Length: 226
Image (tube, rainbow, N blue to C red; front, side):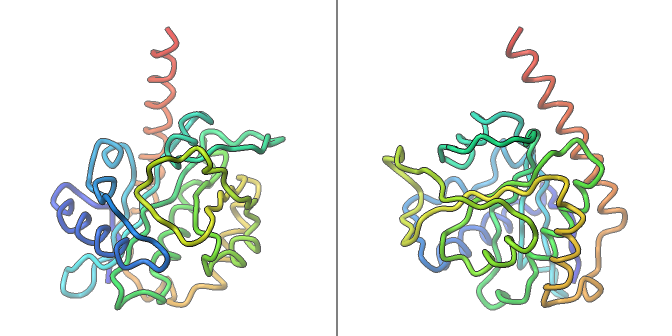
C-alpha cells in the first residue's frame, strides 16, 4: 500500500470513493453528491490517497487553506460564535475523509491526518480546523491531542447536502499543540505508519504546496481589496 498525492488521472476514482463512502456513512443521508465531485476547490487543495496492492484507491483525505473567518464559515456552512485569543489564520482544513466500507476501522485516514499535521509544522499555518458529527468516535482522541471543540451553529441552514442524526462540531487545533498532537496521534494509530509506503519526498512536496497556496491566497485577498 502507498500514500501519495492525487493527480488528474485519479479524479474519477476519487469521486467514486467519496460518493460511496459518504452514502454509507453512519447517520448521514445525502440528497446531493455534487459537492463530492472534483472541482476548483480540489485544484487548490492537497488530496492524499491510499492505494492498495491492486492499485485501487481505498481511502482519501483532503487538506485546504482558508485565510478568513468568512471563508471558513462558508466552507463549513457554519457560524462561529467563539472569539479566539490567538491567531487562527491561515488555517488548514482537513475534510472529505472517505474510505471504502471494508477498509474502515484500520486507521488509514488517521495516518493521513498525521502526515498533514507534519506538513504544517514550521509553516505559515496557524491552526488545523475541521467539522464532525457530535457522535463521532474520534472525539476523545481529538481532545487528547489538544483540539478546541464546540457545537457548530448551523441554525441558518435551510438546505443542506446532509441530513445528520446528530449535531455538528467545529474543531480547532492551535499550532502550539501540533507537536504534542502528532505524538498522541502516533501513539493511538491502529495500523503502524511503517506498514504503509509513503510517496518519495511526500512531506517536502506537501510543505511546498502549503507555502504556495498561502502565498496565492494572500495575493488574491490583497487583489480583491484593491
